[in-house]
Length: 173
Image (tube, rainbow, N blue to C red; front, top):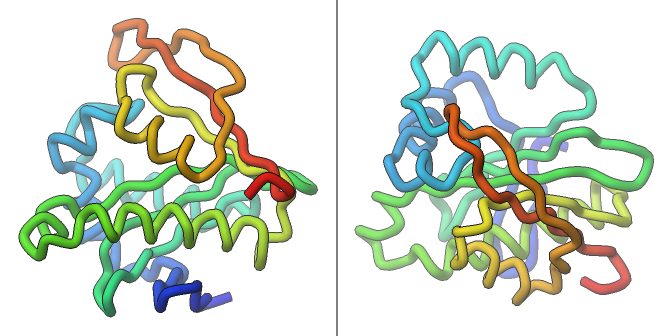
């Protein structure tokens, strides 16, 4: 799968090497880092190591989300098992805020990621994790039918943080 057209004209496509600089810039945005499990600024070398490992791992898919014809975010699927997968995402906050499209893109990415998981990937369960204090993301996930199925603490840059585990089953999507 190189490209998958999703409802509403959104496109998910596999990451190419030439996408790496913009992906790293989006991922290093201060608000994206603050909502992530790794909050330090990611170096080019660290990003290259991550990409080499991701590309070599058959249980991982990394996709670029296109909104209104432009690259606007990243969707990751990890731990592909026979019928379940973990996912995560981040967006081009600066570009989408400048264009006034952040909320539409955020909703579009969530919809596209769910449809891709339950469609082309053939999953029956989509799982995720979010920092407990990230209420906007928790609300969006609930809007799409995700259930909060657990809470635990995780070390984030040397500090214990509360994390909420989420799950969406295909029949509930």
